[in-house]
Image (cartoon, rainbow over all chains, first blue to last red; front, side, top):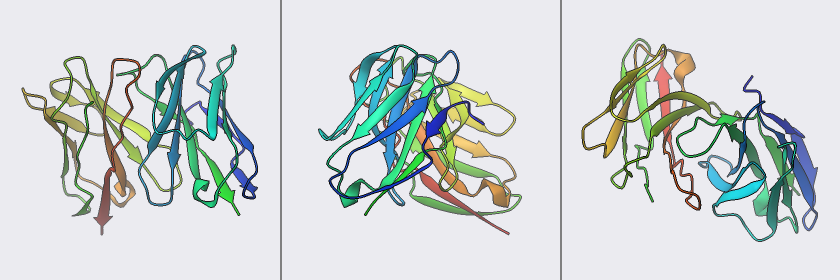
Amino acid sequence: DSGVTQTPKHLITATGQRVTLRCSPRSGDLSVYWYQQSLDQGLQFLIQYYNGEERAKGNILERFSAQQFPDLHSELNLSSLELGDSALYFCASSVGWGKNIQYFGAGTRLSVL
Amino acid sequence: LAKTTQPISMDSYEGQEVNITCSHNNIATNDYITWYQQFPSQGPRFIIQGYKTKVTNEVASLFIPADRKSSTLSLPRVSLSDTAVYYCLVGEENAGNMLTFGGGTRLMVKP
């Protein structure tokens, strides 16, 4: 158990809908990262927050947004969903950023039908 | 931006030593090199991290030459349960840079 909690584990929705994925980082970790992994693909970095502020941005679509709350949990909002958004979404946390070790959650599997 | 390059896949047999090399020609002075292991439908798990020379822990060794343009993850005496995807990650110190996992190396351990 990495200590990072992601909910829900599975999510099935339809095209055009909006969903919210939630992540609770390990106790004491200030950084939260979001990644997308499509079937048999590598991990695509989406966005990083550090202590409530956006720290780094990857190839995140404009339809996607995220935030980190004062209690350090984070939410990833995906809107106007398309079939191609079906993927595993992982959240990771670390104490800081850069060389700090990231601890990953079990992921949320999103299926867009 | 330090991009990493790894072999797409490797095969090995139980009991053998496996070496996976990662190239990172544009590594920055303050960057660390970190390796992760990922099983299907699970989040990646930290294996080892280093800056230069050699680092060893209970599961692996990491060899980094003086120029730091590459690194080699060494798994001693692999077993079937080591079958996984292995990612090399070069840590970016500055805000605004992407955290690049790369495609990873799919290791298949055969009996």
